[in-house]
Image 1 (spheres, rainbow, N blue to C red):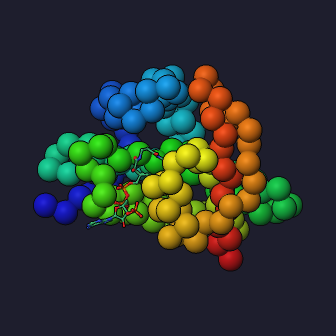
Image 2: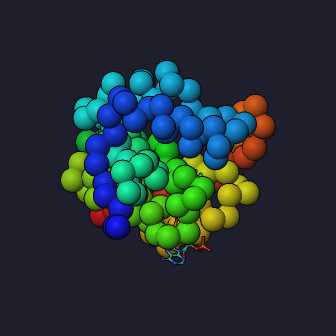
Length: 156
Ligand SMILES: CC(C)(COP(=O)(O)OP(=O)(O)OC[C@H]1O[C@@H](n2cnc3c(N)ncnc32)[C@H](O)[C@@H]1OP(=O)(O)O)[C@@H](O)C(=O)NCCC(=O)NCCS
């Protein structure tokens, strides 16, 4: 069956945590981080999950906030994850597209994200969707001390 997207609700935190622990064993999001993000839905956050055959296959979240350019809104991809068993079938693209559509609805003029410099598959996904490298944050991911590549997509 085709995957379906729906809003991320508080009862999705537990299955999302299982995916986090598998995909990001060094620095998984805590239950508190998920709660804190969901507390700002819909004001400044947008979170969706992808379900496949009734089970969580992935999730993604966007933050929209006042931009560095006065009187504008900018988006930040907060998280995007596809469970290992569901990767490589286009779900990451579906989730990212959902975030970009929400960014457009919220009139974001640009969307930003951080991705580990050694995460080639995620970077390829972002480049396919029009993101470009915009800088490096050294040691951004702790405790592993991995660098983050900052990427930006102009929406206008
Ligand atoms: C990065 C991530 C979100 C991508 O999700 P995904 O569902 O695997 O992404 P897609 O399926 O859209 O694309 C992945 C690959 O599958 C390929 N693909 C997509 N649909 C396909 C299909 N129907 N048949 C065959 N291949 C396909 C894509 O071309 C892509 O190939 P490439 O990576 O070699 O360029 C996922 O791998 C993930 O969760 N990784 C761990 C967490 C992570 O790194 N998150 C990002 C943090 S910034």
